[in-house]
Image (tube, rainbow, N blue to C red; front, top):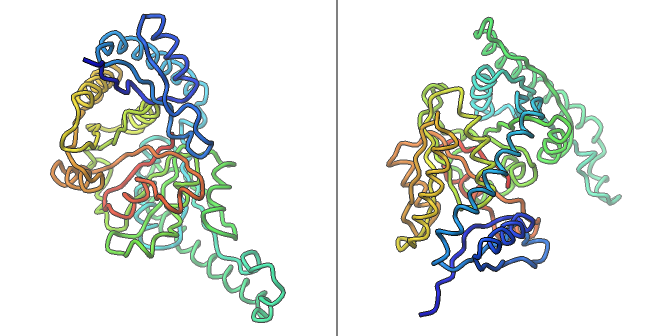
Length: 374
């Protein structure tokens, strides 16, 4: 009978090559798939494939490689204390959901000792006008319009500043540092540009609720920032009933058994460490999921319990042919307070025609979502 071929793990090309070499040294035959894809698809990763019969020999090699990677990550994180200890970027648009995001940001900043920069971008028709002379024949009062828009933005910022500082004053001796920035331009571009300079530990943004039609949200600033930035983005939905950080008890992390999971889980565990939270790591698979998925989940479960022995962790498989439906049902059934997901950066064309899972979940959920980038 012909040996069954399985995917051991999905890694970057460099890590896949190293693992292949290590496996062959142990007498495990393997080959790499998706190694020579065009640039737009490289982010999918390289599949390391082996014979199913060799799994027991291959698993210790893989665990050693990943353990070494985690030790290196730990060293880097200690050296980069500035980024870890906390700058929170809070982009706002003066809406109710921005205020809800601010409530969350204040509580989190107090908990982790971070500063918050409140950031607003206002529309400037001078910048955003099309570069054709004919467009200006309708804009004879453009300069006055710009002044009016800027004045309204300043008034909005002052009102929001009053709101957030009243919240902060109630913290007494635990007040957090608040800073304010305002620019003109296209919101998502300005947020991403400022984030590169500011290097936040986290970006916190509000978003409209589930009752809005998804067609109206295709250009959502929050969704575009998720696609464009490299920093983790915490999304607070308008419909989320926020009652304080101490009420967050169960956090769901969706895994695809990818190398990026280990980095994301490390950040997530540090993020949740200040309070008592259970991490539930799930993988959505068809109702006829393979034995291999069960083995991989069990391996991940053992890794998490060993690595994060002071954190309550659980791993589970969700049987569903529809990812979003499976997640939504699980969230309701298990009363999940928080969702975390890792997304891959994609080309502009792929974003247009194939919205990411994170973006679909953003428009589909009333539960806060923390998005990492692989």
